[in-house]
Amino acid sequence: MDNKRVKLENTYISLPEIFYSKQNPSVVPSPEMIIFNDRLADELGINKDFMKSQEGINILAGNKVLENTTPIAEAYAGHQFGYFTMLGDGRAVLLGEVVTDDEKRFDLQLKGSGKTPYSRGGDGKAALGPMLREYIISEGMYNLGIKTTRSLAVLKTGKIVYRDTELDGAILARIAESHIRVATFEYAARFGREEDVKSLADYTIERHFKDKNELNNTKSEYINNLNKDNKYLTLLAKVVKRQAELIAKWQLVGFIHGVMNTDNMSICGETIDYGPCAFMDTYDPDTVFSSIDIYGRYAYKNQPKMAVWNLSQFAETLLPLINEENHNDEDMDETIKTVEKVLSAFTILYENTWMSGMRKKLGLFNEEENDKVIINEFLDIMKENKADYTNTFYYLTTGYVENLPFVATERFTKWYALWSDRLKRQNESMSEVRELMENNNPAIIPRNYRVEEALADAQKGNYKTMESLLEVLKNPYNYSEVNKDYVKVPENLSCGYKTYCGT
Image (cartoon, rainbow, N blue to C red):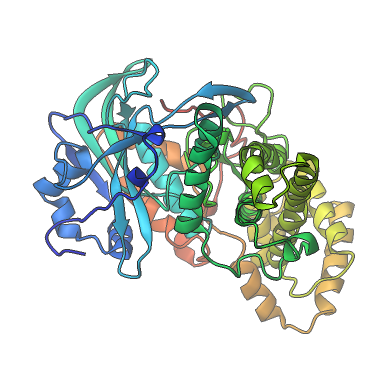
């Protein structure tokens, strides 16, 4: 990386022009850097001092377009709450791709950068609160060890945006392995030619799925024995595997995305688009925070099922390519059966990741047939007693079970004896059990009320609350005294809490 400026490439424009529109960001009057992610800049090899200079700020605000770059807005169309609609980057522009010293490629996108051909009547702008919210929660997810897009910076634009009230305008500089979505493939299949879908699939494979060993030794025998010579079937299987692992990790930390539409499912397996997301406080599988999800389509318990629904839409776009690779033009029915088996592997792959994670959360190093009974009974006790999901595992890990609201119940006493006997049947010491549990049960998550406090102060020009929260979130598995204030939760924390898309 050049020491004086950031260098960007753009391989996405090698795709047919149906996939994007050339679009410069809108100029803003007085950009101001609110927060910059030094650690991420170091990981990408981006010069921090340059990006914080006035020239760097102008680049991240969209006021300066680098020479030999082609900013674009990406086109896509997909299903929102089950209904197909035309979409696209309505308020975002891809500046280009940062290439790291180890040849990894990351998109640099500006969110809130003005109108594009896909704005659909919107103003193309973003408000400060939602952009800071994405910054906080995406960094929290990254530190929890969950694949996610990340935030390089948030800047105020010096313009007012109008929603229910007047708000400070802002731009989020987002980093992603790419912004290719299930909805990108749906768009190509619906509005393009088969050759366009093929071009997109080939580009996606080359950019994200070159590892020939990715499908080796999974828990699905069908996936293990899949015909790897069919590259489009292999692409589908790899996407299914990554999504199964991702959603399982969401469930393990109590993350609720809130709007799992097909445009919000990243093909490469990153968590993307932190609109009405939130973390579950009181354990309840029916939990919904999003104000627009009135029927609970994307409730906590439904996230795995909704992932399969989205993947089915993705699979449908690949069917002609998979069939062609099979040299099976006469019998699409056989190809459909094959694809359905790949999709059904999601459940096995998800269950494996989730069970493995739950065992670790309970300090279990090996597998026993009765483990699922132990796990489900513990979750049922939590639900019955309206216990905090994160803190229940935290107190179990630290040994402070007297802090659990159900410690005196007969049901928990029986469960605790069952769990203790299970621990004794493995060879590891209790200190090793404690270490395993600490490494898999976060003491700190981006608590909804903490995030709201940080945003409320930020709206007043005080960013210290946010900075303190971000500092604590860097070490979510740190069980030291310094984090105790962030472990405590007010009573009735989740009551009435609603999240919004922040558009």
